[in-house]
Amino acid sequence: KTAQTESATMSFAGLTLMAGANTIQATAQDSAGNKSAPAEWTITRTTNMPRVEFLQPAQDTATKESEFTVLIKVSSGQTGEAINNAVLTLSNNGVDAATANAGVEGIYNLTLTLADGNNALQVKALAGSLTAYSSFRNVIYKTTAPGATFVVPLGGEVFNLTSTGCASGTTDCVLEVSAMTENTEDDSEATLTVICGDSEASYEAAVTASALVFEDVVLADQYECSLSLSLVDAVGQAATAGPATVSVDRMAPTLTATNIPAYLLYDDDDNYL
Image (cartoon, rainbow, N blue to C red; front, side, top):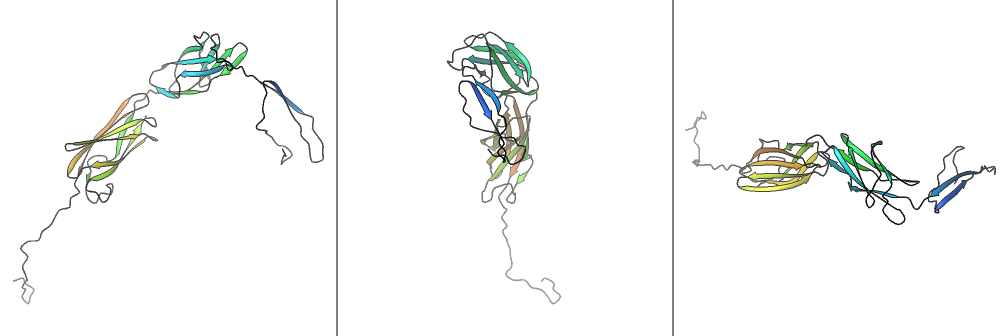
């Protein structure tokens, strides 16, 4: 590679390492042809490193319980054989939180007390002279309850022919219903139940950035409609909103003229005769 300045940091990607010790040398040569002494590194590629993996939780998760147990499997990176005598250290947000040194079929059980909010868990396994690390698992410990509030409609509205929230060209009011949530994770599922007279319909949506949007909600014309919302957060806690009650009247009145005389008579002073 060619440096563009007198002092530069160079990187070389795509080097292939063999199993065992690999000696890497780098030299530099200036424009006058002067060559530097080589810089040398030794990198050892170990192919029998233990494999450390989370069995529980299998993916990032959330919980409302402060005591949390993880299951870790340790096995040979070459043969897949279980390793039962490794020394495991579980760290939480970079701080050691639990240890274990006896596995059954390579599976280790570690329990810790979670901190409020996000807990970034990682396990270090020492198997003989070899040290290996798991990937991270994020566990959210949730101590707050979810909530939801209607934005459209708020309740008490009357939707008529001029209501801009209703889709044009329809007899019923076809509306986009929205709500805001608090302490609710993305992808939490919500259900909107709409009752207009004897008719009931349900609509589904998922939380995105604390917001809920229910598309194409039908509010029947000439009825009072009740809207109720329910949701469940990532740890199974329920929340509700409503009912928000609205009225729909999109039928224009009719006006009929009656008793219209054929002609009108006025005198010279514009008095009606």
